[in-house]
Amino acid sequence: MRRCRLPALAIVLGISLGTSSAAWGQTPAEQQSYQQRMQQLFRQLDRNSDQRLQRQEVQGQPYLERHFERLDSRRRGYLTPTDLMPAQKPRGERATRFFSQADRNGDGRIDRREAEAYSWLLRHFGKADRNGDGSVDRQELQGLAEQRRQLSAPAQP
Image (cartoon, rainbow, N blue to C red; front, side, top):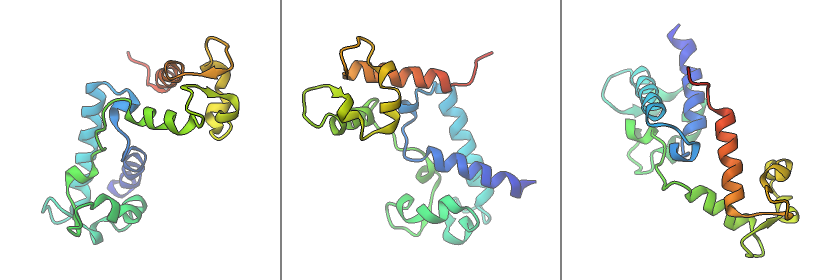
């Protein structure tokens, strides 16, 4: 049974690494739950209980095998629990960087032509352009991101 759960946990890890929890709009309880799952994964993989994941301990975990060097940013030859935690970036940093890249002409708006480089934005352009002026500003893009977070969040009992 334990073998079956490890790949699923590694997939969650692979999807989550490098993405700020703030960018996903997670609540503190969701962040705590995520961190507990990552600690559980680490304990399961740490066969010798030395609080280090050697390369041989991550064998069979495709994501960790592929990204071992990137996660071991200090080049120690092993991973610690903190190496498996998502990078904490200030809220909105990723969105700001995206907006700057997409706004190629620097006018503070993303028009439909600029959005063509981003298929997901082009698909949702009509929803994002709330005032119907043919372009999306930062606030409209933030509103679209918030809508997507709310739709993808699990229902609260």
